[in-house]
Image (cartoon, rainbow, N blue to C red; front, side):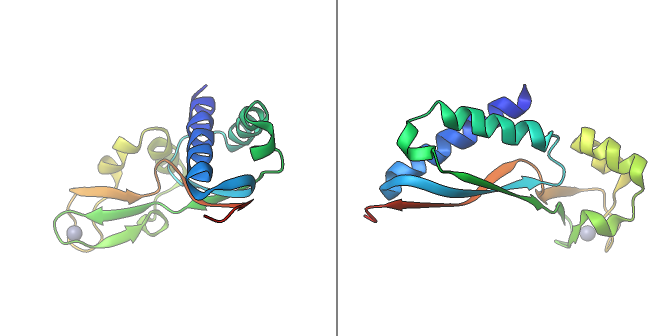
Length: 139
Ligand SMILES: [Zn+2]
């Protein structure tokens, strides 16, 4: 049910932002899903559509949903180096392990520059709304 609560949060944000922007109708939203966000994107999209349907009808009726993957980016806390998940050269098994529990990343990954295991995931976790397009009064 994890996908449903994420979808609810996204729709709530879309509605709040649309009101702020003075939109009368949302035509398209673009959502970025982190590479390491553990989620079934088909269930997520289904949930978005279902939740949108029961909202204020005129606002979200014609909303199209576009999804994009956001690449996971790591940032070293020691030397400031940034690198992408794809550059770590990990195999499928490690990828699955990290996908399932991103905390595990520290077991498998070291900074490619200074070899420190002290890094953070700068991007690639969570879901964010990239943009909202709509028709409104334009205020
Ligand atoms: Zn480093």
